[in-house]
Length: 83
Image (cartoon, rainbow, N blue to C red; front, side, top):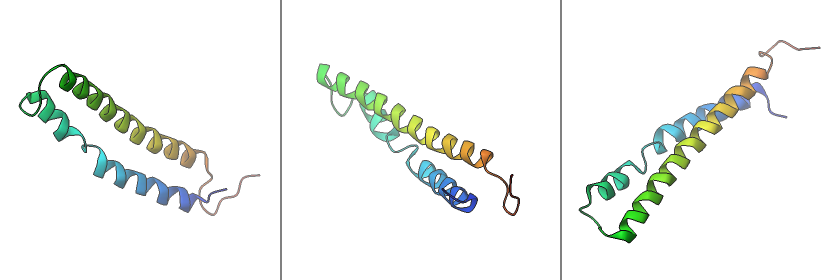
């Protein structure tokens, strides 16, 4: 079982990682959308997959933070025990 302090530290770390990686696929998506790096049916399929993967990364980051927020909300405050 985790302590409240451990969950707070994990939440902070998750938020830092989210801030760092939220936009990691923005530039490749933009370059593919511009159509100047690669064109054709294979490029279109790749661009679509890249957009889907960016969406997955962002949802995973949101999910981790939400899960830690929920866990923290259910934990008693430090120094207060529940019976």
